[in-house]
Amino acid sequence: MGRITASKKQLKGDPVYDSLLASKFINCLMWDGKKNAARKIFYEALEIIRTRITDVEPIEVFTTALENVKPMIEVRSKRVGGASYQVPTPVRANRAQSLCIRWILAAVRDKKGQPTAQKLAAELYDAYNKQGVAYTKRENVHRMAEANKAFAHFA
Image (cartoon, rainbow, N blue to C red; front, side, top):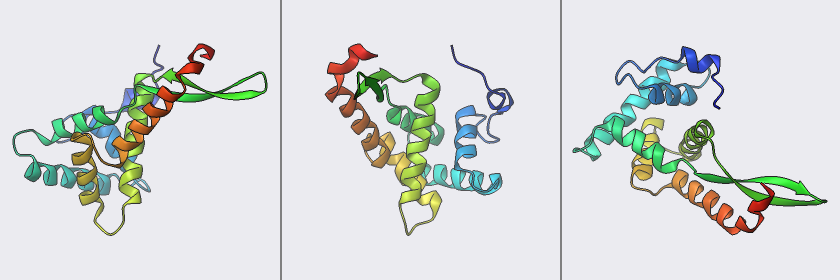
């Protein structure tokens, strides 16, 4: 049962692609309430992607990139009899989306020395091709869950 928050009800599709996912991403990218700046960066990044990948629409590259970074399973700490175990648990859809957006933006913000639009385009391009920092983060989370599957019965 997904809880519907006020933001979910109020969220409108973005002005160019009418995509709720793009709107959510732009809102997460936004800094200090500067939505126009965030939009400009996002659309500039999609234009850079358009020049790199000509046979697929940029918004499809964006959604595929996010899908590739979404984790299926994660580890949560659980205390059992004085010991903490890393218990693998499935990730709900809302949380998976939040995590993939967070990881991509963290990867973009950690890179230095380029305009944000270029860094974002590079990270989305990498995620689309199942590589890059955010995708590596997802793989590490999955590897951690795989390593701890012996504790799955504590879930």
